[in-house]
Image (cartoon, rainbow over all chains, first blue to last red; front, side):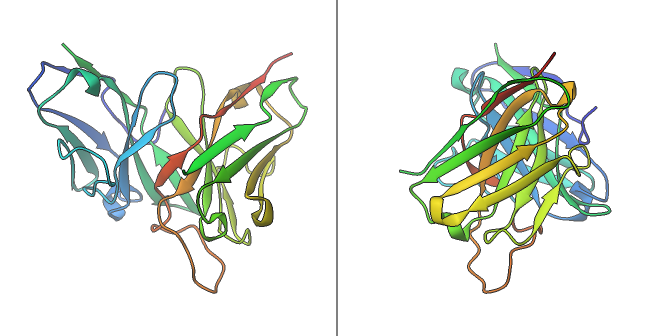
Length: 112
Length: 131
């Protein structure tokens, strides 16, 4: 069982918007803005698409946006495109007994 | 061009050891902390270890603490993960990944909230622990 909770799957039609949630605790998501999101295509390495809750690395589409409320972070993809279909993972810095990095279990996005 | 390439994966029996390597190019390796992240088949990523830019500070996930050792040789642009007492549950693809923020202070780099996210990843090395 992953430390951060995500829905197993989400789907949407081209042009629509979808939101993926990621729930943690005060020790991780709720305790800082060190939350990131990764997109992963089958057989490939994860790709950073959001960091620090809502910042986008260079080259990442404006259609990807992030937010946070309390212990839950969210990733929104607007204007869905077929090429967005992938697995998405949230990640958060955490401090319990020592620093660590937590990941969510992943959400499979299907573009209908 | 920024590049990260892992090697050294393979099939190993439970209880044995294996060392995977990661060679980087295209950026100043000595000013970046590095992570190892693994992903078991059909599962999400799992953080394994972090090492600061000069190698002084190292941090491990509880699941590997005392069994795995992360190290680096900056003069050779190489990162290592020595895996001992391997278990079936260590079976995974092991990724080497660069921290997004560089670190150029004169003090050794610790793992804090500025160095959690990773912007450059390798393709991974597959490690299978099986008898």
